[in-house]
Image (cartoon, rainbow, N blue to C red; front, side, top):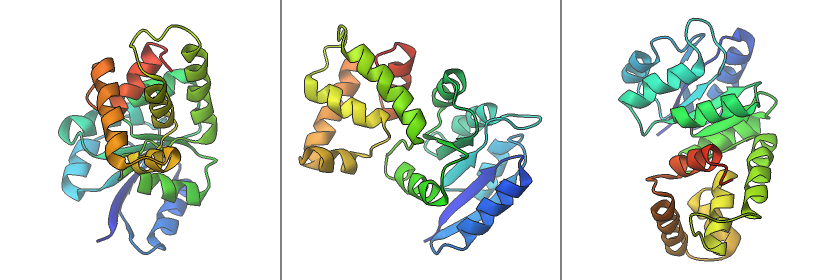
Length: 210
């Protein structure tokens, strides 16, 4: 079954180009494209996508407001922000609103395809510069006190989570079983008092854990 995608972006040329490229790949179907996030909840309810690609800066209703609308109705839906902005505030606001990934518009089409695949398997894809920004903050913080009592391996797992790795990718990186990774993840969630990877990333940014 094809992956159903909706694109929200007020840049018509970019939106239609991305739509055309995705439509040309077997296994992907763009079921709608829109220039504003206004009414995004109703659109998602009607078209039932698997993944939403959302711009940040759009007229009438921006992408961050759009995420809030969509996530209230369908919290499990994967949303990838696709934007020219890489400042801390928009990144933080997007993740807090519920974004599952954050790509800059200079990302290649192959990177977008990989991001779509990743978010459907629990990953949190980010452009390299965004990942470096988060990773740098993580490395700086990890030199100080670890007030949440995370073990060295748990810190390493959290580091890969903020880089956008899926559980399978983390398992491969450490050459351990998926169940071992899941155990580390459960411990991380317990110590951080969160329920999912996105909440862990948001908390890490908010409290400068990462």
